[in-house]
Length: 68
Image (spheres, helix red, strand yellow):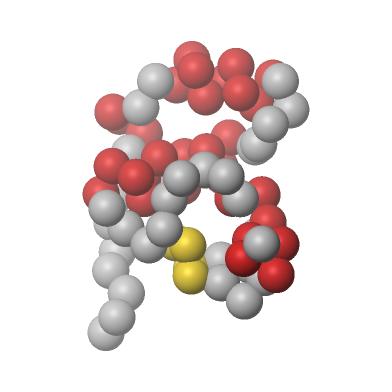
C-alpha cells in the first residue's frame, strides 16, 4: 500500500543525452531511465544499488555507499 505503479518517463526524456551518458560509461540506460522517472514524478527510489549515488533523487536504502 506504500508503493505506486507508474509509467516510465521514456517519452519525455532526452534519450540522446541518456545514450551519451551510457557511452561515457557513467550508468546503464535502465538506471538513468529509473532515475529520470523518479525525478519527473517526484518519487522516492527504494534501492541498494550504489549506481544511483549522486543522481539527485530521493533514495531509501541501507547501502552504506549510498548513505555516505
